[in-house]
Length: 397
Image (cartoon, helix red, strand yellow):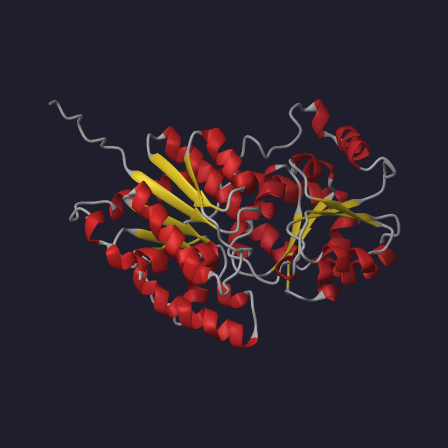
């Protein structure tokens, strides 16, 4: 009987948890580029919108039931993931974020080429005993990652300083510069279009009121609480300024309780582009990052930014913006000063926005990111002994 020729296209399995925010965006962008290049892409995640969008792209999708954070259910999550891997039989596993990286490395344990992408280090996200446990795991688990992919040199340096000894690759984040762009026509790109965009999003916003937008999950990492403390000072200098917090998360109620009437909690939105285009200034006051996507998206839409000087922030900006647009983390006074200075200087905002957009187009196009990830896969998938799935009973232990 004639046997079909083996399919030469590589089979890649992405494992993701969480399934929202920047992690979901990166997984979707990589899956889209890899499918277009002929890679056989499957993804395992708890489902949600990410699962639906992956299916829409034509990627294979396998539901993987797993909580967002480590807990007593971890052993079951690892067993379920091991079974999923047995069924998919990937040639390479790419695990995204701390939880998926934990479960995937425990399930695979070096039997298949494994890429781990932290999307910011787990030990920065917690404190006390939990931080110590997270650090111990990252040091131990590094042996089961053929590469740890960091999105900035600063993120890599943080890992190395913490004693996470591994083979690193630094591949900066990229965004879809076609989707994230200024308003589509020259006529629509001016102040009149901005006012029109604002009126559609915030009908009670005056046409001349400065609008600050913060896009991100409402959580301690993203630092919206620091921005609200800074907002009191900003309003003293720019009384008619308005702030929109775009996103949802565990800190929503606490932020709402302390927000001034000039602050609008918008919630999660399907498309952030209109909010970027409507803004005079985009702010992300994170306490930690690897390299945040929101500032890159804002710059691509032709909007200036103010960021905290955490991992990846300086590398995501051209030098002219880094000098003016970075402030220390968790410093409301410094944040207020930088925001006020830009809100009261329209020509400077325009100049910085133009420089920022040109920088993103040349440095942070998602196509460049996908090409570098593809190069990494090719390196890891070079000649090696075939994996025997029949001899991997210990994967469940």
